[in-house]
Amino acid sequence: MKTIADLHIHSRHSRGCSKDLNLANLEKYARIKGVELLGTGDFTHPGWINEIKTELSEEGAGILRSKGGYPFVMQTEISLIYTQGGKGRRVHNVVLAPGIEVAEQITDELKKRGRVDYDGRPIFNISCIEFTDMMMRISKDIEVIPAHIWTPWFSLFGSKSGFDSMKEAFGDQLSNIHAIETGLSSDPPMNWRLSQLDRMQILSFSDLHSYWPWRMGREATLFEFGEKELSYANIIKAIRTGEGLAGTIEVDPAYGKYHEDGHRACNVCMTPKESIAAKKICPACKRMLTIGVHHRIEELADRPEGYKRPGAKPFYRLIPLHELIANVFGKGIATKGTWGEYHKIIKLGTEMDVLLNSPAEELETVTTEKMARAIIGNREGKIRIRPGYDGVYGVPLFDESEREYSGPQKFFGDGPEEKEKSTDTANAAEKKPRGRPKKTDTAQKGLADF
Image (cartoon, rainbow, N blue to C red; front, side, top):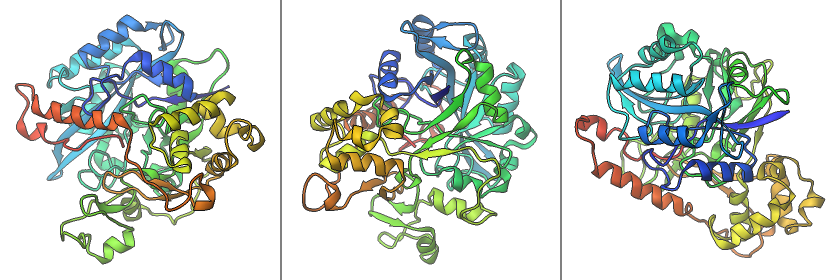
C-alpha cells in the first residue's frame, strides 16, 4: 500500500504563511488532495507545539493522529545563517523527530542558542556540522534533511549562499545525512547528474505556506508499507536505506520559482547559456542576475544530461489540478469558477487519484474534453511550461485549440493567500522581537514558497 506523504510544511506561525494555516485545515485539504501523511511543521514554536499537544494524540509508533484519525509526523524547518570558509551561508534543513518528547528536547537545546517564539522557522547562527551533531546527541532517531537544496537564497547548493559539495557543508557529520529534498525547481534526473548525491535518497515535499490544494502535496514522497506498518521507524528506514521508498511526485522543474536565471523587476529570464554569454549581468538594469537552479546544476554536475542513476526510484511530474483548470478555462486560480470545475472533477476521487489514475473516458463524464486532455497530457509530461525565475512561478502553456476560450492565453497571479503572505511578511519585518541582531532580521527578506 503506497502512502503519499508531504513532510515539509509550515503553520501560521511561520513568516509569510496564511493566517488560517491550522491543523483542521491541513487535515481537511490533505484528504481532498489525497495526501495521506503530513508533517506537523514548526514544532519549535511554543504556540504551535501547544496546539499539536491539544489536537493530536501519539499512538505509540511515532505517529500522531487527529481526532478524525489523520496521521502526522513531528517535523520542523530550521534556518542556519552563519559564516564558513570566509563566506556567508544560509541553509535550511528539515528536521523529523520520533515524537513530542524528542521534539521538545530539540527545542530546549535550540533555546540555549537563541529564540524560537518569533517565527515557526527560527534562525540560528550554527553551522550545518554543529547543528547535525547537536541533533544526533539528542537522538539518533532524528532525521536532518537538507531542504530545497538548489534554491538560490536559502539552501545547501544555492547560488547566493550555499556550498559546492555536501562534504564541505556537513563535514564529519555527512554520514548522518541520508536524503535531500529536490525543491520545486529541480527533479530527480537533475540530481542524478551529481555523483556526490549517489548515496542520498531523493525526497520531494511541498514546503507549503498555505493549505490550498495547489500548494499542499504539489511535491510529495511515496512510501510503501504494509497495511499496518505506518510508523516513524519505517519512514526513517525508507529515508535512510530506500527500503519502503517508492518514489516521488514532482512538478515540472520549470514550474519552480527559481528554475532559470533572471531578474523579476526587469521581466528578464535567461537560460544558463544566455546568462553566461551576458556575464551574468541583466541586460536591462546591468545588475547581477539571480542565478537559478538549472544553472547551478550545470556548474556542479559531473555527468551528462540524461544520465539515470542505477536503481533510481520512479517519479511522476504533475502540475496541480487548479493550475490546469485556471489556464484551460482562463480563470483565476482561486475563483469561484475554478473551484466549481475542481469540485466537479474530484467527484471521481481525490485530486491525486484524478491526476495519476483517472482514464480519459471517466474524466469526460465530469468535465470537458479539452480539460480531460489536459489532465492526461499532464500525466504524460506533455504540458509545456513557461519557466520560472527569480521568484516568479512557471506557467503551464496551452495553445488556443487546447483551451476553452479563444485569443491569447490569459495569465494570472497567485491566489488570495499570496496577498496574505505578503502582508504577513511585512508585519513580521515591522515587529522585530527584541534581542535579534539587525543583520539576522533582514536576512530572509523576500522569503516565500520554494
